[in-house]
Image (tube, rainbow, N blue to C red):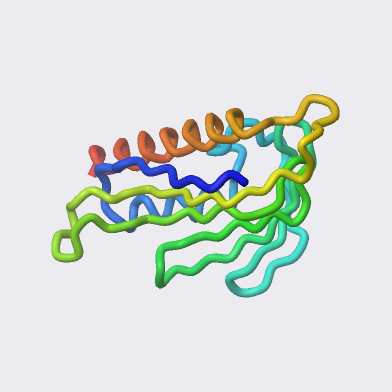
Length: 149
């Protein structure tokens, strides 16, 4: 089982980073390495089921937005190699200061479906590399947006 927390410090306001995470849901190709297609299967209030073409593989996930917690939960419904979830959060470093940096945090709880992998499938190292690249894109974009203000 892969249980890991990835964190990066972002020098941007909470709302700037949160809005980028919401944009990432609408247009994942701009933020997530390896995504070539995305389509919504079902959408109700704060829950969306969508399919992504990720590194050529079909991935289906249930995405739950919890705005009051600044949290987005991605539950894997169909993935070639893993079951589990990834929770993306914006964690404030200070409640009193609106200009304090934020932590962008990804909490992973992924379980391999099988120890025997057939064909070319992204393993744990590749998933971590993709998520870290995604986090850096979000960090860079949020910080660029802040400097333009």
